[in-house]
Length: 177
Ligand code: PRP
Image 1: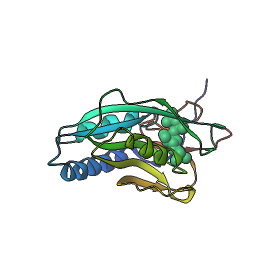
Image 2: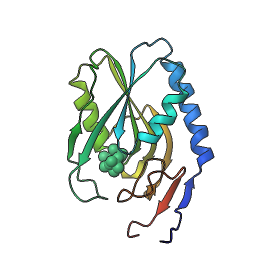
Image 3: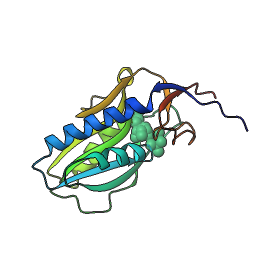
């Protein structure tokens, strides 16, 4: 089967440099914190979370959460459903939600509201990429890797129909592919 590699939008080197910068900033900001919990949003954040967490210079725990959007695969309906909650007790902890991409913002907004019910000490957000023009709801991203245009991106955790997640870079595809 032939395989046309997606066109590069953000190179592996650029991603790794930015991840290093973000990890340094987070390590500085949470330098006095002994209760940091990174909450990775499955599936897309698994590679970013792995790289980011290994570059932190501070104590941290890892949790995962899974959500799914109702509706068709490439258009967000705005309705978000919890598929898997965190496993550990996060009451009183400082949470950093780690996302691969923020598109409409519905998922992150839902997650912030949902995680508040666990009574954490604080919640901040981190996303590798954001589609700035696609925002439908306002949600603050405390640590952002890259702003991108309204393109369909894959790689570094991001998929199209479950394909291309393990590309080491972020590439662009045509969604009809
Ligand atoms: C992606 C991404 C975010 C969400 C962002 O997940 O990982 O969680 O979409 O979109 P929004 O800002 O419009 O809500 P997706 O639903 O593709 O699931 P996946 O991570 O399992 O691929």
